[in-house]
Length: 108
Image: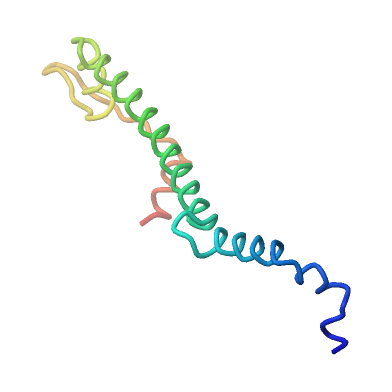
């Protein structure tokens, strides 16, 4: 009997407090629109917004590369720098630095 007369349980004798407590617990955990569900959706939204910004940056880089490759000078420079292409009467000398050679041997 002393258990029911505790000062901590006294507010739970009121029907409104009981109904409110049940409602809050239901809305936080069990309902289809629960707080947990919304929290997961908010995390998904943040991740998708991050991906959106990443892809926008990638598109900007690609647009810059397309604009660069739309001219003859840009195509020639890209072919020479990235693919080591040359004109018929030219010689190409590739200069490798010592630190790049050491790193290359460690990777193998």
